[in-house]
Image 1 (cartoon, rainbow, N blue to C red):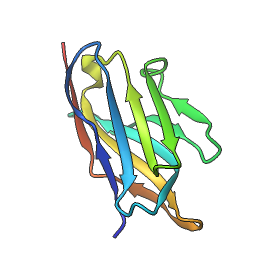
Image 2 (tube, rainbow, N blue to C red):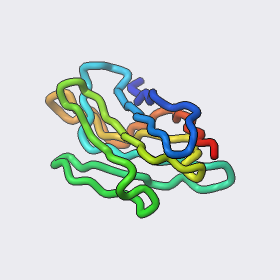
Image 3 (cartoon, rainbow, N blue to C red):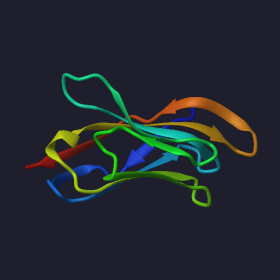
Image 4 (cartoon, one colour):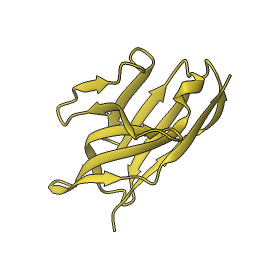
Length: 120
């Protein structure tokens, strides 16, 4: 079964940066459209940023100017660069993507989530 795998999370201090990566469990699959979501304790999962198949991006107001979503088609990876992190960014972050391999593999794959903790 194909899944997405996130990496790059951890514990940082406020103002520091992290870069999350997202890859398909089969390395030959590339990421097409992708979104990063997060869920903090006691809160609903929210969309942080997404990138469409044509490369257009959208961001939640709370992360605009601090986070950047991108895709490396040569490496079949997706990224979320998070700068100027704040304690309120603390959450489990999830990657969601459509995958392709020269054809459409499928839509709406999810990763298992990765913890990001920002201390004040």
